[in-house]
Structure formats: structure tokens, C-alpha cells
Length: 190
Image (cartoon, rainbow, N blue to C red; front, side):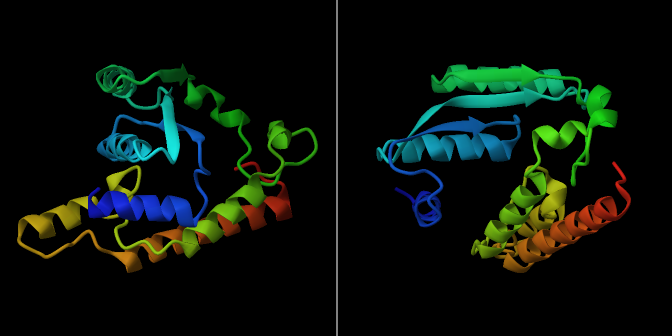
């Protein structure tokens, strides 16, 4: 097992992300990061610690490439010999009905009243992770293009960026706290 897989396995075990025997459904967007995660988890599943039971893809219909992303994810599942669950919805059409934080009486988010608590827990976990290599669902989250250019120019390990990770988490937590405070104060749904 290579060093990256060993580190992923240690992280999973340290944080109890997949208790022994857990069935794991891997969320895939069609991007290189989720496909790499899928391959890593499939490789790790051979150890018997957990079982990858399939892939899941949500077609949000927000980008022109959404249908192509869905087809790609279906093709990946076939090539890897795993099941895939695909759902879709016109997210933009539902956006006016969504309440992100702090549900109030009559709000549709009452179906998820613990959302603010879940955000709090997520930030606590993110802050506790000893992340050296920061990757995200979208390259803009972690400065992928600039880091890639530095790598092409010969920089040693430009993707090792624990400070960038901490900064990103802090920025996202601040945005969350500001939105929550505003919504708690005014009941604003935006």
C-alpha cells in the first residue's frame, strides 16, 4: 500500500469515519478529485476495513456540463464494476424555497432543524484535521491553477499548503457565522 493510501487509511481510522464493516457509498461529481477518491477507497476496501457498496451522483442541472458529468459517472461505475445511484433535480428552480440556516416557524428548513449544529460540528472536525495537502471539490477553493503553474515551473510540492487549508476553513466558518447571525437577528432567508 502506497504512502498516500496509508495516510488516508490512518485518517479514516483516527476519526472513526468508517467503523469496521461499514458500507460506504462514494459521492462522485465527475471531477478528478471525486474519481481519485473513489479509486483510493476501492483500493482501501480490499483491506476489509469497509466495503464500497457503490457510487452516488446528483445531477443539479446547474451547469451546461451536468448531463455530461452524469454520463461520465455512470461510465466510471460500469468500468469499475460498482453500482451507481443517480438522482437529479432542477436546483435553480427550487433555490427561492431554500432556507440555508436558522429555520423559523413555517420555513421549509424545519425538515432539517439541526443544520446550524451540523455546520458547527463540520467546522470543528475540519479544524481538527492535520491537512497538509488541501484539495477541494473545485480548483478555486485551493488555488489549483496557481499551484499547478508553480509545479510546472519546478516548485517542490506546491500542493502542500496547510496554511491555505486553515485559511479557507476560517473564511468559510466566518461566512457561516455571519449568515447565521444575520438570519437569527432578522429572520432573513438569504
